[in-house]
Structure formats: structure tokens, C-alpha cells
Length: 165
Length: 278
Image (cartoon, rainbow over all chains, first blue to last red; front, side, top):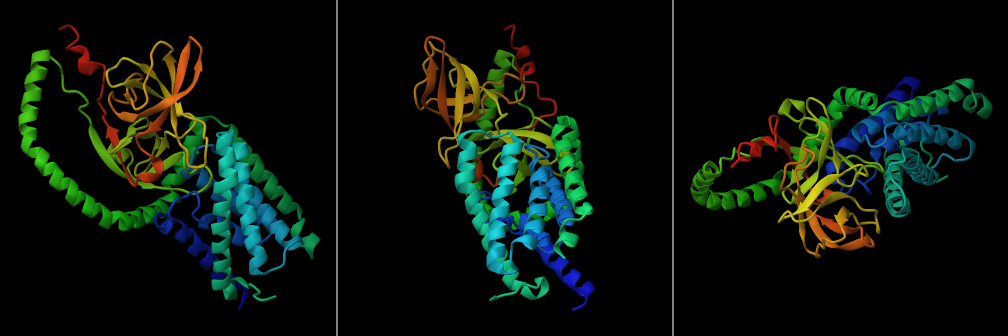
């Protein structure tokens, strides 16, 4: 596979996730626990690229998220950029390139994002933050991680995922 | 390889710039934030929201058809008596010298839900300024009040739900004997989303089960929209005031489409002024 065709395939997978995020949203039930496919696209991109690019991609998706959900404008930009940067950096330093470990990365990414959005956003406090972080965030992180692993397995050729290592 | 690939100055510069831009976005005035958010919604988000809108329509079409047929049948029965009631209403208004109240119109809109930890505080709606929606347009569902429109684009608008910490509405009991301010109550459980009625004088007791309605004060919400039902006393300041817990009339998670009370010329106070002297 040439470098160019590889990039096109990865772009197609990321585009599919972005489209799926909006096309499947009404079918996925409560948004509090449904997998966040757009954020998953950021993480999948982040583990394949440099931290700087992942941060910029995260920032732009965070801008989109803040625009559609303008509760604490800027908080998603910060959270997505930081998580994108950390995912790209941490993937190279700490993590092996296999779906199970990537699933853990996706789970941690959602948790860190929610912590940053809630704490830096400053719009929620007390028990609201507690229940979000204690219940809804782990559930959404789990569904997002499972979706992420399925995507990696489904598109392992395009994403160069090593299965069974 | 690692230091060269993952510790470059460009990467550090990129994250620093992104964080600084995010901090700036959080710090700028709300009007600037709304302008930027609106620009994004009007450009790159348009095809994405249109896609979500179409799939939402597809998902809900069958259930809605069944409900529509049922509602149409009920409406037909009511319509038989409506003409007589309207005639009687006109006659009574004429006697009281009152103008027609709440002469605005309603616009239906689909709900496009977003993900993330703040998803339960706002909604994207598929009706915008081209449909006559404006900021501060009240948003209701068949059960009662759901929230208020915050920002408007040509085809979409963003509404704040009653769960938002900034949400406030002036409330009253049906007989108008008790008034207070309704705001979201602090969560006491993962699925507990309640309102609280504050500022009720200590001498006014509101029994559990009492229904609350918008009072019309403030000019944002027309008088008489159901808000919820009193559950009991949450806390009290001895001899000064009581705060009541209120079960909302509408749960935000249960609605797929909403009604926006668009009323460009609506003036609640003016609706009564000609009858004031009688």
C-alpha cells in the first residue's frame, strides 16, 4: 500500500466515523451513554499522528462540539486538544499497537475529556459533577472504547492494527 | 525516533497555541462566543446537522404517524365543539373588552441531540430565524415548559433546557395565590432531575401535588404554561421563606420534537390593557 493510498484509507475511516456520529445519533439512545464517534475519530487520528497535529485536530473538533453545545464555550476546545495531544504522545511512549490497549486509551480519553470539560467549564458543581463522573462518563467511555475496538478490528488493514500480538 | 517524532518544537507550539486559543474563547464576552459558535453552525456544521435531521426524521416517522392518526381522531371530536366554544369565547371577550391574547403562532422543531458531558443542558433545534424563531422564544413540549431559545441561525437554533444552571422562570399556582422563582434543583441522584421553587413567603404553604404555571412576569414566557408539580418542602428559612422541590412537567430526555412559541408581536401586558379600565 502506497503512502498516498494509506492516507486516503485512513481519511475514509475517519470520515465514516464523523458521518456515523451524526447519522447514527438518533438510533443510539441516550446521548449520555451512547458512543461518541466524533471523539473516537479524534483518538483514532491521534494514535496515528504527531501530538501537534492531534492537538490541532482535537481543537477543531472541540470547536464544533462547543458550537453545537454552547454551555461553556472553550471548554471542549481545551479538553479535546489536550486529550488529542496526550493520546498521540502517550501512544508512542507507553502503548503497544493493539486493539485491547487502544481500547483502554479510548476509555481514558473520554474520562479525561469529561473531567476537563466539567471542571474547566465551571457550569456544573457538587452532586451533578459527581454523578456525571461516577456513572455517565464511565458508561460512555465504555461504549466508546468498545466501538473503537470494533472499528480497529473492522478496518485493521487500513489502520495497520496488529491483532493477536 | 521517539524524541525526534514526539518532542518537536512544532508539537509543543501547537498544543500551547490550542490551549491559549481555548482559554481566550472561554474568556471573551458571550456575544463573541455566540458569534463564533453561530459561524461554525452556519458553515461546517450544516451538512452534519442536516444528516442528523434526516435520520431523526426517519427514526421517528412511523411512531409519529401512529400518534398523528390518534391525535387527529381526538382533534376531530374536539373540533365538533370548537366552533361553539370559539363563538362563546368571542362573546365573553367582547363583554370584558379584552383583546385576543397570545396571538402568536407555534413552530414545530425536531430535537438534534449532541454528545458530551454538557449534552443534557442544551438542544439543537431544526427551526431557525427563517421560521421566525428568535432568541428568548419559549420552548414547550406537549406536557409543558421545556426551556428557551438561546441563539438562532437561519435553519437551526440552540435552546437552553430547564436543567441548565442559568435557567429561571417566574411561577405561580393556578389560582395565582402563590408566586415564586423556579430554577433547577441540585441533583440528588443519577437520574434525578428536579426543579425548585424559591422565594415563597413563609406564610404561603404550597401543598404537595400543587401544579405550577408560568406567571408571565419578565415577558419571556407567556402566562399559563405548565412547569411542574410540587413534591414537598426542600428547605426553609424559619419565618422568612420556603423552597419547594418540583417535579418537572416535561423530562428533556423524553422529547423528540418541541414546539416554539413564536410570537413576533406578542405583548402579554398589552393583551390586558384595554380591559384594565373596565
